[in-house]
Structures are given as C-alpha cells and as structure tokens.
Length: 102
Image (cartoon, rainbow, N blue to C red; front, top):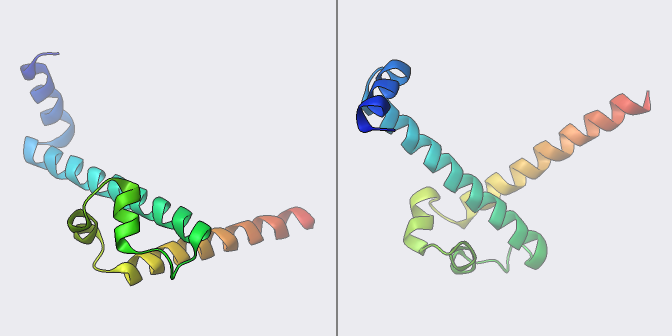
C-alpha cells in the first residue's frame, strides 16, 4: 500500500490523522497494561504477592522499571488491579456455576 491510500483510509475511518494516532497510542497502552497485569498475576500466584518486587516484574517483562512506573505508580496499584480481576473472574464463574446447577 502506498502512503496516499493509507492516509485516505485513515481520514475516512478516523476523521483525521491525529485521532488515529491517539487511538493507536491508547490501544498500545492498553496492551502494555494488560501484559503487565497478566505477568504480575503469574508471578504472584507462583511466588506470592509479598515476594514479587517491581524489579522482578520489570525483569520478567523485559522492560525497565521506569517504563513499569509509567503505567503503574507502585506495586500496590498493580496488586489492586490483579486482585480485582481475580475477584471479578471468580464472581463470574460463581454465577455460571449457579446457572448450570438449577
């Protein structure tokens, strides 16, 4: 594809290029955040919440701690999101189990 075709596609679908860049940036941020939370969950299940450090998480992800802190202010924020996700998943599973046992 040439640049003109791509630019025309973006204008038709995203109104103008800046909105596309904002959209792409937001999607990239969501992907990174999700990857951080998934990796944190795996490490915390394996080693325990107290044992996992921001250093461990950054090393496992292959990113710097500076990048990690760009997305989360501290370990507590990560723990809150990981535990919240687990609780929501358990609640959803519980509701499914109740629905199938009737």
